[in-house]
Amino acid sequence: MILSMLVAAMALAQPALSEPVKDASASPEIRHSKQSGPLRIAVIGLVHGHVEGLLWNASRREDLKIVGVHEPNRALFDHLAAKYTLDPSLYWSDLPAMLDATKPEAASVMTTIADHRRVAEVCAPRGVHMLFEKPLAFAKADADRIAELSRVHGVHALTNFETSWYASVREAKAMVDSGAMSPIRRMVFRHGHKGPKEIGCAPEFLHWLTDPEAGGGGAIVDFGCYGAVLSTWLMNGERPTSVMASASTLKPAIYPRVDDDATIVLTYPNATAVVQASWAWTHDNKEMDVHTEKGSVHCGKWDEFSTRAPDAALVRSTPKPKPSHLENEWTYLRLVVRGQCDVDPLSSIEMNVIAVEILDQARRQVARPATR
Image (tube, rainbow, N blue to C red; front, side, top):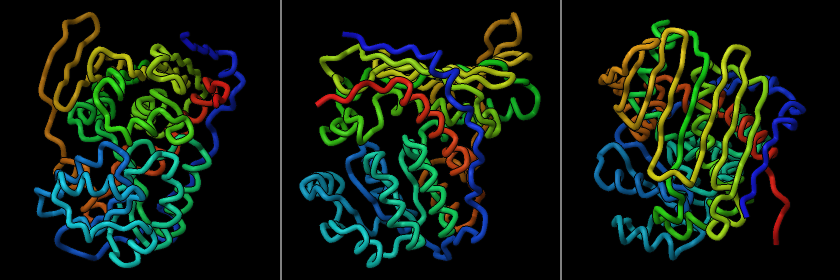
């Protein structure tokens, strides 16, 4: 049975996202690392499939050094240690003990989303900067707590999105900011894939992705977060005046507990954003369209970029190269925790708290009764 909940009426009853975000850069100031050489990084959690990207990079790069790995499931650590030639001595079952003994500069957080707050409560008081795999959280209370910890203890709480490293979206933002493509009137975001089971996600990853308590929802959180943060960034941190959401389970035999297809509509005073998040695309999908009064911009993966003037043909072009500090998440993390580059807005606590507010409203609107 397809579960679909259109909730425009509910959205009208929802309060606008008007509460101010606490400034994470306020006193005390960020305590940047004074170390040099490879970034000393701790890996917290191995249940997020994206952790393999870090393990692969650390095995080949000279600017990264994993100093400890915390994962309650020792068998999972042993499996990945064999695959990426990790020294068994890196394993820690006790997170505070690992941080106290290894003293990392930063932590890559690859736990369930629900565990992000718990990790921040351990890392921040120890002065450990954090890079969370997207999203920062799915509940507003958790995002607010992480922001508070970041501010009080002077550490970065950054969020990593694949699209942050696309030259295409950087070029789009530059064109909007320069006035070449402005003002924005409509944004459309299409993110997702065939589904985590269909693309072969590991069992430990699939387990929590399809658990509404651990992941907050299905596609609405997993891929709705992209449009939520990108629209916030394009609108320079402006909150939407309303959030409307619908969600369906198109494949209940595979995903009985969570949605696998969702749409979020964000209304701004002078623009609209449509966030299409799905585990039912026929292909991997990470696309963004920005429509303005001077034309439109299409951003595909990485360097796929095109523009279109009003009533004119599509023009494909190559976006400008990214700044060197934004080459990838690991280069960026090393530089930002050492104070050698500014915090990129797409990863910032300010933008991501707003993105979580959007997700929280959306997922509450489409929440289904709890099942045993």
